[in-house]
Amino acid sequence: LYPLALEALTGGKISVGAPFFDLTFGPLMLLLLAIVPFGPLLAWKRGDVIAASQRLMAAFALAIAAMLVTGLFIDGASVFAALGVGLAVWLVAGALTDLAVKSGAGSVAPAAMLRRFAGLPRSVFGTALA
View (cartoon, rainbow, N blue to C red):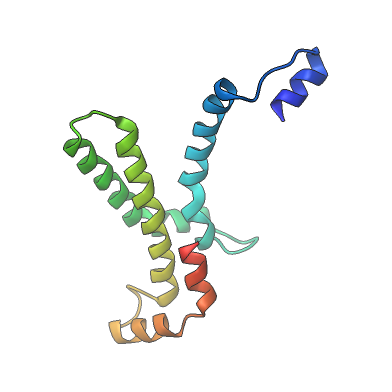
């Protein structure tokens, strides 16, 4: 919308090609990928961000560890590669955290957790894998 607003206000035109796209797409996607794991953990209209962030602490620690290990293996050649691996682990661990919370991991006995996990609707697994 920025190019349209700029043209309407100033009459000038800006290209939505490589320079504009490259400068805006990356930061917007980083922000989006950082908040995606919070979505399934928040209840509609009554979500608690603090409780969701506490549930995601293990996923966050795992993502940071993966980022650091990747950074060590690539010898600092590309910070963005380590950031990409960290974001990927953050997304996968966040999805698994949602499944763990819904199956009662840590709050019920392991046998009860497995029964709850097996009894989850297929839509929960679809949400986690999407």
